[in-house]
Amino acid sequence: MEHRYFSSAPGFQGKHSARKFEMPTPQLALKHLKLGNKRFVASSSIHHQMHNSRRRHFLYHQRPFAMVLCCSDSRVPAEIIFDCSLGDLFVVRTAGHALDASVLGTIEFGVEVLNVPLLVVLGHENCGAVAAAILTYNQDRNTRVEKHGRTAIESILEGIYPAIQQCGSTEPQAVMEANVLNTARMVMELPSVRSGLETGKLRIAQAAYSLKSGVVRFLAE
Image (tube, rainbow, N blue to C red):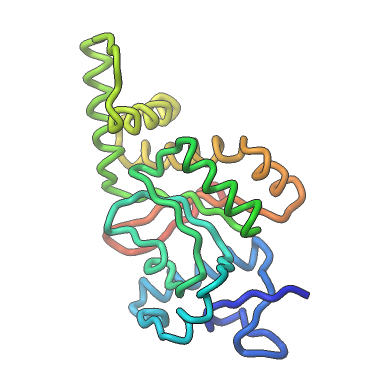
């Protein structure tokens, strides 16, 4: 049976070795992240130090138990807010967790090659990309100026417009959460992701992070 190497968190101890663990179910992977966030919020993180033995263990392979698609904001480092160790998470970060071909390809790699059982789409409060999208959305709607070319940043912001339209609000928190749900829906259209969901080998969770409290709140549960 294939084993995976995890951090020494409660609930992941193996029967025969303290350093080898089976790849968890999607449900157990989600539980592990929730417990890690609780430790982070309580200032009782156990993975603030990365030892040489941990680094050497992953010289020639990686075996993350979850993938996190999140914003590039420097205040939202997934490994820290979920109190995970080196090698635990496969993290994909773009401003406003924007999707493009390279991001979608990276997600497919995580699902098809690394066989991660859990994908978390994570937004956060006070997101600069969301705030800028709301501002430009209102400006574009009011001026109705036809654009003949988009900058790379504009492409990111316009990708958030559907969330503004779907939630029917320009309130930042509402738009951020709608953007998380919308991103998750688009990711679910990938054939490998859809297949994993249908077989139960993969789960997608949507979440929002509070900069003030440090709490990760899972949506649509």
